[in-house]
Length: 113
Length: 117
Image (cartoon, rainbow over all chains, first blue to last red; front, side, top):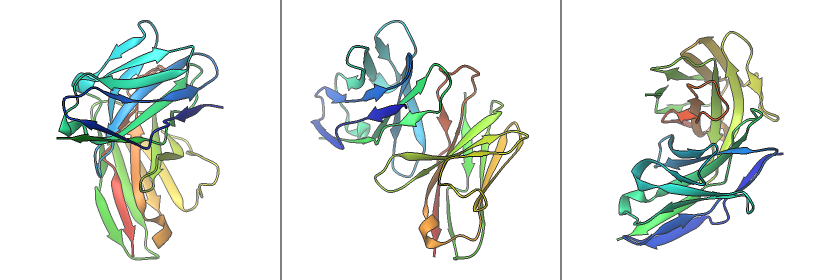
């Protein structure tokens, strides 16, 4: 069965510092991995995805994520955090065989000025 | 591109009434749409997969007679919460993907906040 873990409920970081939001996954076969961001009372916005190829994926708003097959991880990163990055972040996985998307529990990121 | 529009953004209704939520793909056709429910400070729970021209596929534990889904066209799916009760109060979000491949991301509507009094 597919699963996604985001071990941190909350991540706090100072503005201008690098940020990391962690994600690990379990899926049969090769994974398709996604990151989404959710602002209050809004739907989810797609940030980036990993399909195949380079392990470092670049996405919207300066975010990037690194796929690590041996650690089954797909951590979201940004070199310099902005206060406006404060939101709820979801990692999601889908297997190559077309299973449903499975979302992690979410991590709330707070960027402090 | 790949815009999903959801309406209404919020609704307050009395217990026992029914509420319809619409989900439209504005610039692409979607044979499949997904309906999620999100509780406060929790992740998304997939309720059902809406299939154009056929019956929806409901996840285990979701009452199909309570949450009626209709996908009458390639750009519109509706979720009707029938005989709503306060425990149905939640944030409902729809999504769809414009691509055919399994690696296409989901695109989400802005959600509907339902409050049942």
